[in-house]
Length: 166
Image (cartoon, rainbow, N blue to C red):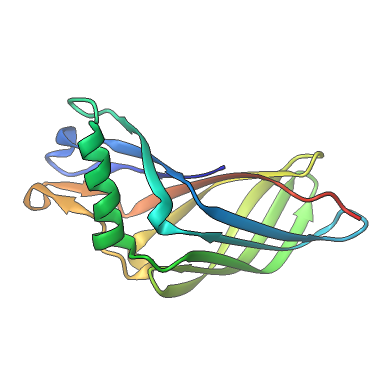
């Protein structure tokens, strides 16, 4: 599961919604040693596969037309069609925590990132990662002449099962 959570701000924020956006097409890869030690992680997302699952805290419920317009705006005005990718450069595990460093590419801009994730004894990696859009050259979406804005920081939530060692 990979999902994106956006939050609204501005004087007209009641006209908008905080969004939960499902990522429909993504691929993750991990290298795990015979001893079960994680050594690298990769993730690639097709931004054209984003679908609004839920709109929260708005004055009225989202319609199918709203969802379609949001998806189109994300592709045309925010992310474009280039894949979003993450490639680790270092992975350190300490108990049930992973410290992952690497390079994140969004909208053609690559930036170094470092995040802490959880990992279960069964090999499920999970976490919520803050991403600041402007660090990648993205202007957060604005509507109603700037009175409604998407907050610069969005969250990417992930939960994936690592492959078995061996």
